[in-house]
Length: 265
Length: 268
Image (cartoon, rainbow over all chains, first blue to last red; front, side, top):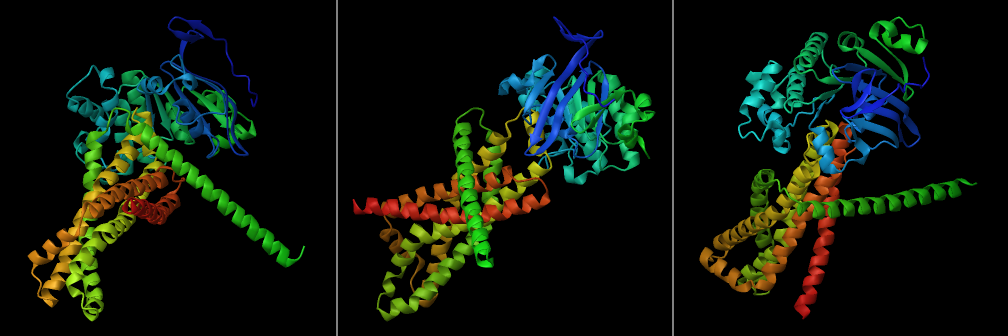
């Protein structure tokens, strides 16, 4: 633990990178990002496989959100290699990046619903730019309804975000994430700011979406309960590096003080 | 080092920082303006959002512009009347009020009201969108947030401000005419005939062109302050506040340049 040697054997194949018989969806190598003297990421590595639920845990300010924003090109890393579904993010032009983003769903920490739009308009918004991905549909109503039904909020279609509770906003945001049928979903603190019951509902929703659409999920969280339920594999981000990796059971029984600190009640 | 020397050094350092910040801010605002011109010519034009913003800008300011214009026209006439009577020049009232309102007072007052109302609103709105990651969400969904949020807003203020100025001018003239009608027994028809006879293209065109620039400045500063608002709710408040201050200051600078340039043309 605590070393930085996570670079398993990778083979290139016509359908993309394959490691240990599984297709690599996200590949991050030696990612570094600093804000002035604050070195947030110091050579972070990560590999997400197709259909996998990977949880990245870290304390507040440990660089989890920075890492996830670098993944979708919202932030430029200082150095490092980021590949998503076979495309190197840092070398893409704007059009290519937009095309890639259509395959990535991003659930923001605070839901990030557009205040000035209704739920319907919020869900229609991503379709405007990616209509061709959905077969140039002219009537978006069925898509919007399907996405809302997936999160159990079809009745809120004409409401404004301000009329929704925190949990409902998170579910609508998840519906907006799903509308383009992404292959990968990035969750940035999906349960933060929610009460335990609502958080549990969101976690269940994440699991059911993963089962239904067979998406790969990268979940950024500091919520141990969330990590326990959704993770197949976990990475602990400490001091800008992947300090420890393993399943929940492996990590929760680890005696390393820095690892133990995450799981102490 | 004496206390005096230490104080002097601190003040010099403070002045140095202020000058550096001023140039940094001016540079950043110029880049923001350059980006606007680059993006505005690139398709697609977010036409629906542009119309929505035009409605918002007009709707948000119309009542305020109308009320203020009316009061300005009323007060200007009431205040000028005794002096003009003293010089036996009260018949020149419509000419004086008309020219001063159309050339200067109307555009400047309307622009200042809009700076307070629209620039602060845009600063707060975009700042809050930045803080709550709505701008990031827009970018991730494949929409260029600069084009969707900034270009449409700047275009809307640039297009709508001249219209608001026209409204403001007309209402101010009506306020003035009302005073003249009540106090001087001048009919509305005579008043407006005199005003429009006194006004020439040399008064209307520079004022209209100036209004477009005022609108551009208001939209530019409001969007710049909001778009680059720092994280946190405090940042939203600061964005709204500094948007008004900077926009107002820039309006006077633009006004000075506009008057200076117009004056050159008058001399020709």
